Every structure is written in C-alpha cells, then in structure tokens.
Length: 367
Image (tube, rainbow, N blue to C red; front, side):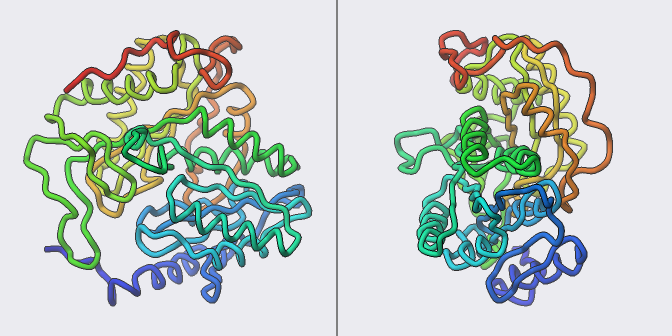
C-alpha cells in the first residue's frame, strides 16, 4: 500500500490548486470560492472566452493549459469527477467576451450534464455559449459504452489550436465549427502495464499479471476490455497506430499532429522511444508526421502507461498549432516549426470526404 502525500484524500485537490496558483502567480489566479483557475493575461483581440474542465488527477490537464494563447479558464472537479455546473457557470461569466464563451468538453456523462446546465444558466443571463465535444478515445468506441467515444488526449491539441484561432478574433460560431472538425479528425488509444493508485485506499485500482498489458485503458483509470501479452515496442506501437489509422481512414500523404502522452509514471526515456517507433510506423504507410508533442499532458494519476493521439491536419491547423502560447504546461523549449512538406489537398481524412475503404491501415489484428 502506498498512500499519497496529502493531509487527507478530500483535501488534496484544494491544496494542490492553491499551490499551483502560488507556483504560477502572475500567470493564473485560483478563485477558491467558485472553484476555477483563470488566466491573468489574455489577448485583447479575442471575441470569445475559452473554457474547459474535468476531473482532477489528470494534471496538467486542464489547469496547466490556462494562459496566453490557450484557455481563459479551467474548472477542476474532484479526482476523476466532473466539476459542478456552478463552477462552470461562474468561470464562464468571468471570462466571457462580447461574442460569448466556448466550452471545450470531454465526452463523459457528468461533464456533459454539468456543462450543459451551466450553458442553460448562461443563456438566461444573456451570454452566448457553444460547445465543442471531444470524443477521440477508440477504446470506448463500442455499443457497450452508452456515451460513445470518450474525450482524452486530443483535448490538449484542440485547446491549443482553438486558442490560437480565438486570438485571431474568430467569432463563436466559427470557433465551434473548427473545434467540431478537429474533434472529428482526432483519435487516441492508451495502454497500461499497471493501474493507478486509488487515493482513498493506497492500493492499485486493479491487478495485472506480469507480462500483460491492458490495451485500451480509460483516462479515469478504467481497465481495458482485453489484456494482451507485452510485446516489443515496435509491435505494440504498430498495433496502436493501425488501430487509429483504421478508425480515422487516413490516406497516403495525410498530415498528422501526434501527441505521445504519459499516463503518470512512464519515463521520458520510454516516451521518446515511443515517438520514434510511431514515426517509423507512419512512414511505412506514407503518412506525414508534421508536428509532435511528447510528455505528460493528460494523466491518470500514477498509471503506468501511455497514449497516442493523432490529429489529421492541414496547413491552417499547423499554423494555428505553431502560434505562440505561454500557458504553464505548454512546452516552450525546442523548435517544432520544422519545414513542412508540400500540401496535397487529397491527403485528408474521411472527415473531409474520404471513405474508410480507402484507408492504408488494415483493421486491428486479433491478439
């Protein structure tokens, strides 16, 4: 048993948010009364405020992406629990601009309900509100999951791209349409060799025999519907890439932005090796990786695992992705603006009119 370093399980989130605001004072403020984190500086050209949120335990999602060029505010709930609609309403009122506020919402039942109630309250206040629903998780693309695909790592990429678009003065309808397109073009899959530690018990959420992986774990630490034998990294990443490619219907020449995301206790050494294997797998299919991020962006407490997110991009999306941002958790080092290949407008995903029958990726083979 390994308990978290905390005064008590029910005080950890509150104490962490206070510490986060202290660590990044001058960039963000924490409204403890209403339960949200807000940026201190935002572009004066914005006509729409951007807001997201969800359960704690996924840090740096979402609070780490509040800042210049990204979110105006984020509403953290308790561990793996939706924020209350009151938090979302108060934060929305605080950051709404002349054309309203855009909610970026992961596709979970609690989040949808509470953001929906807040949107109704905003309408009564006369504040325009629209929603972008992120549903990239392939593991939950099943009839047994009532809500459908859940929102995971793609949320980070969408928050960044929409932040840049908002800074250019786009209106609410335009941002909502762009967000919907980005969500449709994003897919993720996650694997784990060990469960997260439950804060209230200090014990693993589930047991996994040595040599096995959970293929398709959830962001809330849900175990997958199947376990597979641990295999060499090349084979594992190929399997994950083909699962995403088959779902997204990628074609030769497609441009991709990739997120290689640690779930809490996977080392950077491993994550960079994963990116290398991902690049190799995509090149074998003639798909172009134009931008990539590696690190812990959307975690599941201390889960031993990682996720891969692919977003089908075009020149405009890459330009928005490259725009400056200074949110505390957004990477500032290095240069992601490497030279781009020639753009072929036919290298797009089914979201732009291509059928899955033209995909270069085979269906996922049985384990």
